[in-house]
Length: 113
Image 1 (tube, rainbow, N blue to C red):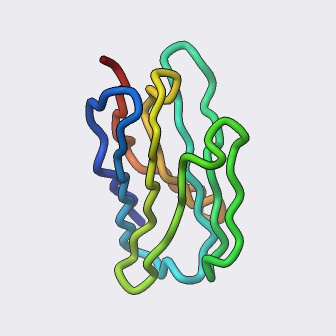
Image 2: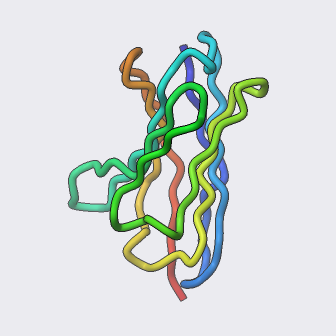
Image 3: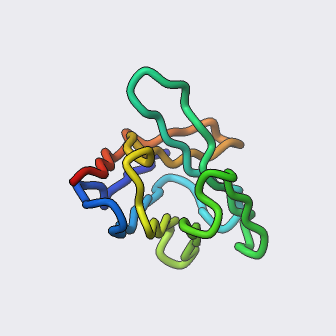
């Protein structure tokens, strides 16, 4: 089982990024998936979660209306589209499969002018 995130980087406030998480070793379509983030000196925070069929998505209040989580089961990939980024979104972002308790290595997102 492996989860590999990509797509992070440095972006100015108000900018956008799309994170990807490619999974191998299990069939993505059968699993609920989540995105978390962890800022320096802070606890890991749940950002969004999506059911296996993709029809129900939950978001943290801090990202509602700005972030969109999606999945492409055929590509074994989950995404996090992040718009109108703010400096407080700066963190390492991780994808997570709760049922397998598997984590990716994380991808750094830095929002700064």
